[in-house]
Length: 87
Image (cartoon, rainbow, N blue to C red; front, side, top):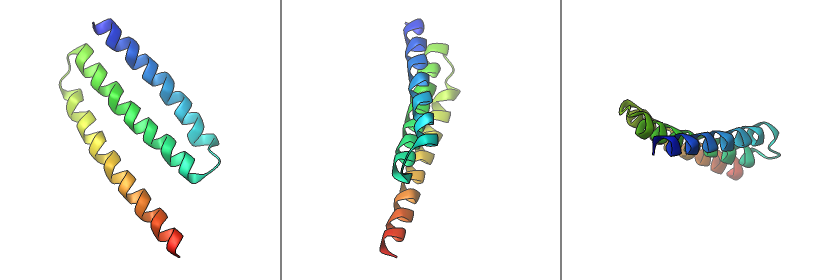
């Protein structure tokens, strides 16, 4: 089972590399922000998979903190975009 979880973490890392390319190439700021959210979500999933496969419970705490930070980042981005659209 740990080998399967590590393989899934590798697949998610490959997905993150595609998302990183979108952050760099993205034609609009919205595309770049969505790709950054993909990186955050995939990073959290990788941490959770590694915590289970390597039996390191501290990684669960790190994943939780990253999830909270990602929620704050989305809220800040949407407030910034809403303020810009009204001006």
